[in-house]
Amino acid sequence: MSYVSEVIDMVQKRNPNEPEFHQAVNEVLLCLEPVFKKHPEYIKAGVLERIVEPERMITFRIPWIDDNGKINVNRGFRVQFNSAIGPYKGGLRFHPSVNQSIIKFLGFEQILKNSLTGLPIGGGKGGSDFDPKGKSDMEVMRFCQSFMIELSKYIGADIDIPAGDIGVGQREIGYLFGMYKRLKNSYEGVLTGKGLEFGGSLVRTEATGYGLVYFMDQLLRANGKSFKGSKVIISGSGNVAIYAHQKVTELGGIVIAMSDSNGFIFDSAGIDLNSLKIIKEKERKRIKECIINSSTATYHEKCSNIWDIKCDIALPCATQNEINKDSAKKLIENGCFAIGEGANMPCTIEAVSLFQKKGVLFAPAKAANAGGVAISALEMSQNSIRYSWSFEEVDLRLKNIMINIFNKSSQAAKEYGDEGNIVLGANIAGFIKVADAMMAQGIV
Ligand code: NDP
Ligand code: 2IT
Image (cartoon, rainbow, N blue to C red; front, side, top):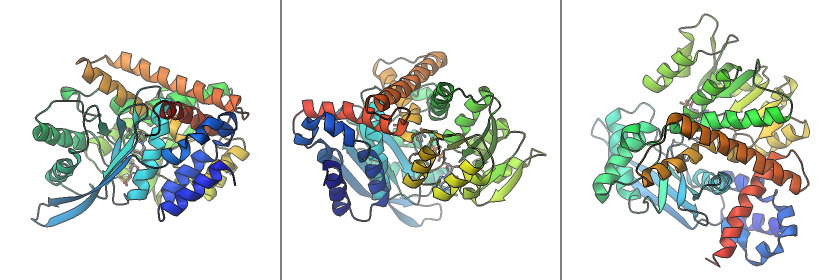
């Protein structure tokens, strides 16, 4: 049995009932086989055995009182996965599906993603099975305050810096920050994605969506294609999806379909971004409302059917495993030539290998959606020097970071004998920096 297979086996035995974590580990580790041939010193130092085990996993109770006076209890998580190259960094997800497996898969991915940004940030992730949908502002606030009472014991601007993810945006980050400041009597950059009035960075809101499209633009250009005139499907209609739409449209693409967990809208003329923003960001309503102002848009139940629509480029920006083998087949049959993962692990392992087999250009999440956390790291830099850069300056840095990630991943793929395989290249390039840092720091 190879070293990699032994570690995969061990992870499965040691972490039963964690399918998403197994999936993320398998996907990465199977790409690393050639690395260990070149660097047997990593095997001797037990780098893999150590990297798949979180440095710390925190689980806690979050009691809170709803508007009817009823006491509710949710479960909170923070995985502090790896601090070899910097303090733990990664988002918080509030969604009823959240469990230890999902937090660990996200935290594990985050280690390599953060490494790819080239910035000094380790890997972490957290969240809760709290469902913000249908809750009042005051309920969300009380929940965030209770969450922070416990989380504040484990985080800090130089220790662990959470941010947003599904269900956690600027509103939640504001409530979390307010409570942290009160508990610690310290004004520090302990969270990113903050409002601009209290230490947030320009471009952080747009960063993941813009970064995804900057990355795809590189991939398309390298293969003689472009967004111009392309029909694009974007799943989801949250933070990542909205700003992916904005940048795709700027580059001449037409976003013909978007979704939420209930269904999707289709508009051959292109979905109107302004009304989407008002309905989703201001009014917090469902995507089906977006057809009201359009004579060409239609709404359809069942979000997974979005992949049946004919398109040139697909950007899954909702959640994990939203594109399975069947959806992948459908996309390929319909002529889709490029996939960019805005969400974390939106394609199953079977879907990814089908895309690769059929020559579909494929940009994996840890490279393509790293723009969000990259600008979070730049928010930390700005907080440290107590200064803020202009929109243009941060946007240019974002663009350069995404170009660098594309180049790094492409070079690693070439060096390790599989030119054009960005999945392999991103995993290897991300891993090697962390592995070298772990080696240098001894057995810790
Ligand atoms: P939001 O909460 O802003 O939006 C999430 C969107 O995805 C909503 O439209 C939501 O629909 C949909 N969605 C969520 N869960 C499901 C599900 N189980 N099935 C179908 N649709 C679903 O989150 P973000 O836009 O921030 O995050 C989207 C993805 O991008 C996630 O995978 C996240 O991990 C990833 N990501 C986010 C980054 C960031 O900076 N925010 C950075 C890098 C990656 P509904 O409203 O119906 O729930
Ligand atoms: O998945 C991700 O990279 C994020 N949710 C963003 C994390 C961050 O710290 O900005």
